[in-house]
Amino acid sequence: MPGRSHTIISTQRVSPDGVTPGERVVPVEMPIAISFLGLGYAVMMATPADLKDFAVGFALAERLIGGPQDIEQISVEAGDGGMLVNLELVPERHDGLFSRVRHRVGESSCGMCGIANLEQALRPLPRLAPPPRVERAVLFFALDTIRDHQPLNRQTGAVHAAALFASDGKLVAVREDVGRHNAFDKLVGHCLREGVDPGAGFVVLTSRCSFELVEKAALAGVSLLVTVSAPTSLAVERAREAGLTLIALARKDEMLLIVDPHQLFA
Figure (cartoon, rainbow, N blue to C red):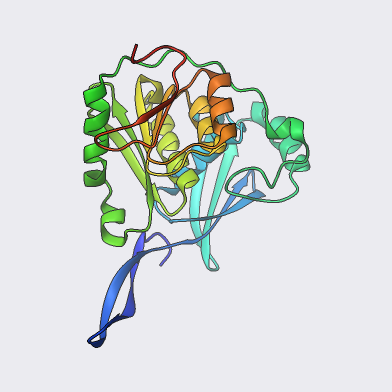
């Protein structure tokens, strides 16, 4: 099962007419252990696909790297009941890694359970450049077509997607995972590894907008973020701090402009 994004389980369909045996495709969820320089750092529950992308995006979100130039090597191997991903960082990043490891008191995909104090929890975000000019019709087109680019969700109906679109609506890249944070990390990691500027377009997330997703966007240079569900108050505050244009409750026929520091639709 390691490396596979889905599997098949036996089911029983219950209806007023009786019980019928059958099968269903479900997404694989398993522990993914991420280490740096051989030091265990986090264990995440994720779909075991695109794990190098995942690890790179996660490292950026944790502020352990500034870009792909800070990574010397990535290895992926199967372990007992899960997958192991190790990143070798350039020497200039070692002190920052060791300091971060010393302050971690737990592990969580949201990045909060490993924080020792409030100052670490809400560190300053970079101020983003204005987003590209995107026509409203392009945003609605992206929302109308994103499901066409979610093969795993089409099979299972149980995973999130993070997709990068160009300003003209062309799909650049998409990643899927059982975790919304993981899907975004995979997308960001892909962009870093392939030399794609995620700030040149806009990102659509098929999830609610928590503050961690806003922070991931800001750290990756994404200045226009679109989510299909509502934001939290802290997500709104962090978007304002970073100068990030935030759209939520987005549907193919309507969306809610939450934060618009550059008057994108004025």
